[in-house]
Amino acid sequence: MALFDQFNLGNGFRRYFSISPAAAPDLREQVFGIRHEVYCEELAFEPVRPDRKEVDEYDAHSRHCLIRTASDSPALVGCNRIVLARPGDPHYPLPFERTCEATLDRSIIDPAKLPRESIAEVSRLAVRAHFRRRRGDQQTDMAISGEDFGTKDQPRFPYIPVGLYLGAVYMARREGIETLFVLTEPRLAAHFGKLGVRIRQIGGPVEHRGIRVPSVMDVNSIIKGLRWLLKPIWKTVCEEMDEGYAAQPPAPKP
Image (cartoon, rainbow, N blue to C red; front, side, top):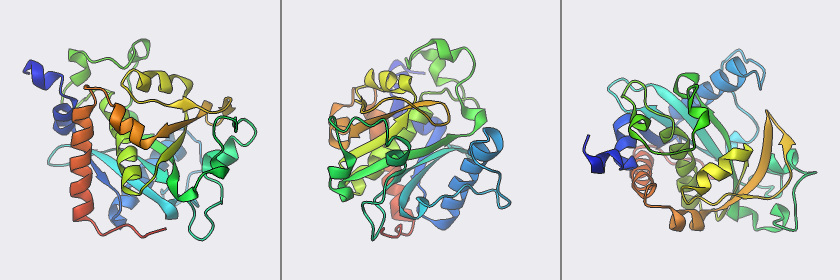
């Protein structure tokens, strides 16, 4: 592998994965299936459902994206969504507003006082067990080395969470969203901060499928502040998401 290619995450991402919006009904079904496998069957965060689809009240006014392997027979890898304001009732709480009602520091930011059409929440990030970070990686930061690129059958961890979060940023920009909220593991903000993605904690920790902290991201600042390492993968994500939207029927407007 040439040195330039080795350090070009856009080329690496395209070699192993593809990302697309899940606006078409069949792709949304795949998203709900991944979520059921991860959230219901594996982690038992939600009850198992007879149809093996994990769906909630927010999906109707969300935008979804999907990562698959880049191969002739693509395998499903992971998904996430951004939850938009509820149609007809924009002040209906986003999921984190309920979960973190008692811990939000509204002196930093008060979601209730922001234009609701300009905010959204990243949620339901689900990655199938086969593609998650393996034992031993937990002792390292999100660094780049030869091993990070792995093989086509066993790609390394950084592409998946970075790709999913950049997919969420892309969808937010496309929908005119300025501010993204997210419940994260405490260490995630530090990892992404090293890559130029500023995630600001806006409240105390809560117990929500583990310890989580409410955080906020400014969409335009993220895009402008991406470090050189992430710019190629951002370009790739934008190109693939653009292609996906062109090939799929438009998602219904909330």
